[in-house]
Amino acid sequence: MLISSADFVKSSSIVSQCPPPDKPEYAFIGRSNVGKSSLINMITDRRSLAKTSVNPGKTQTINHFLINDKWYLVDLPGYGYAKVSHKIREHWGKLITYYIRNRSNLITLFVLLDARHEPIASDIDFMNNLGLNQVPFARVFTKSDKVSSSELESNISAHDKLMLESWETLPPTFITSSVKRKGREELLEYINSTLMVFYHH
Ligand SMILES: Nc1nc2c(ncn2[C@@H]2O[C@H](COP(=O)(O)OP(=O)(O)O)[C@@H](O)[C@H]2O)c(=O)[nH]1
Ligand SMILES: [Mg+2]
Image 1 (cartoon, rainbow, N blue to C red):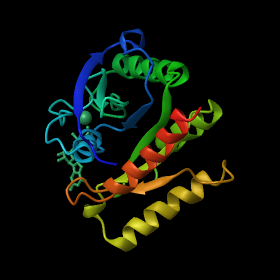
Image 2: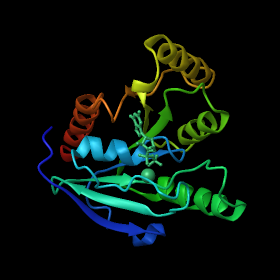
Image 3: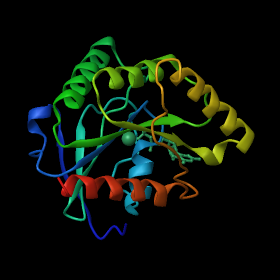
Image 4: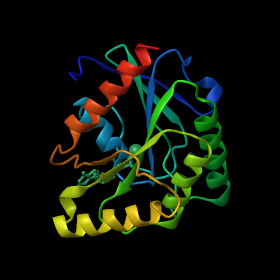
């Protein structure tokens, strides 16, 4: 899929401020610093569409970008940043829970996971919860340029093993590097194929 336009639409601090759910939407979520904004810039081929964070974990807004005048790409606030207060964390939880349960046009939630790390319990819990709430999601292992292929393989298989404790099948999985531009085509192909399903219903 070619990206002919990518425009910032708005930042919303509550779900009711989000643009009307009239176009298919793909959202990116993950811990602060996992590489969300970099991935959004890499996918859209815009150097600074999404701001790469200066204050990790501090921005608690939902940012909408309109791609090709046809679908939304959404940068969700990051979680798990140690320096934020309990209050901000609680606000994040409520905002995200409300967003993923109520955003009727959400096609796929991409859960970003740092390829350098072994599974983190809160990420696994988060994905298990998506399952309970029937939110379609995919995994994206980021920063793959920072690990050897054997480390990558072992981290991903540790993830798979944990997920298979509660799932019969694994979600769609992507391996990316915003620095090496890896995984771009695969992600865009996936988005394109699900867009077609949306427009044929
Ligand atoms: N080596 C490498 N660094 C990355 C990659 N993606 C992001 N980063 C770096 O990781 C840091 C956090 O990235 P950012 O996109 O702001 O993360 P966010 O908080 O999830 O939006 C920045 O210093 C980025 O330059 C990647 O694929 N490879
Ligand atoms: Mg960011």
